[in-house]
Image (cartoon, rainbow, N blue to C red; front, side, top):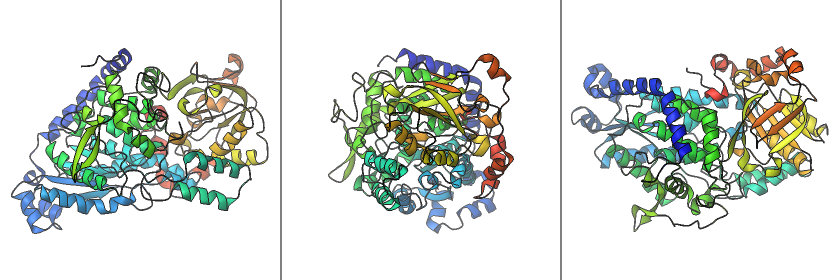
Length: 602
């Protein structure tokens, strides 16, 4: 057994101590639920009849009389999301695979799944973060029929996986497995796409050229190929042991993908002794945090995994992430942290290589997993051996050292995220994508309350200087905490001209955070009285990702004497209306801070 790294031990022990009461209460609830008779045995006859009314007679006989295992499918299928379009055919395949194994299946329910790429920079994006808790509730509604012996969860993208996982953990007495669909084939390289976006922001190419580039990048079924939140989700699920080993990044239409989906059914039936609420313990959550840091994954997960952990009675915070980041080496460079896409990452060893390196370095716990042999099973890659699904060891050394590296020779000695703290609040920055000469920025602030106002100022040439762009009133309470990726191209243009540029916001930038230093998720948010509301145009702001500070260089006396800026009544009205935003007013009122997971259900 490999000795654990002392920081991993310390953080895990602290999380366990902090979570003792809440985790114990959670496990007690699981035990109570698991001790009940099977669904069809404890329910009234009318309940049973309703539950299985539309099923074939033979399946009804299997469930009620033969007491065969009965599985739920909770699906995030729609064909608006390229990543989820392949799920259309999955229920039929899953039913057939289950039937061959003597089990039955029902699609218990569907959950919404929105594409942030479609809504980016538009009002619909203000529903995006809250869709996670909506998905969690939809998962709970699907499973509330309470007749199932396990569940397969069909979801991949940004808020969908965290939402499904939160919902699943509230039914933690059941075994559950995620079934991914895989990435689309490689199209226009991400770096080339980003260059076209910057040229468009400068007015050097038109809409026709931009659309051609975007369609060449996003061109088929599967997840987008950059290492954003969707693909970070898949990395974290592998590190938690909640996939068939190695299933994350296999193309949707590969024969191997079909075999992996069949295997998901077999594995779930074989592991009915492994309820998800017990597998997802403190060590498992810490493993997910480590995997995120070692691959330079999405900053969204500093919000989502706080909420996921809370659903299992586990309490983590940004300080935990920060301390782990100082000890966890960066082992992968995938766009926007490098030039490779996820298909190249997979070919270079992918999640299996990274997990093996972390386990062997004592930087990950050897936890149980849905695979009977535990997390070690996720250090191998699946392949088709004469038509049969099998697993094999990965090469001992990296096959492409520009994409993945061993723990002994990492890209950097620390992970890809940094906690910032100071008189402007607490924030995070994705350092893995930012050149080292941009890790410290000190410049006068220019303050905006909408991204549209910032874009207009850029077009008018008002930002042609060293500047810290501040976009506030973008937090969960203000408007649902949208992602602000429309700001990336103009900021990159300013940076390329040699100006010192940074972004500070209580909004999000997520997994596509790029080469411009961005202090994001500033908490408390401005609307909740956070110190970002005290900032004024012209104040010098220092973002220091080396020291981990975010400071307004204003005297303490003046800072304390200031009154916080207020969101205008007009903007508050805009934030609360149209595009369905009225329906989310209760979530905006009740949501916790970004550092508390932006949870609406606690």
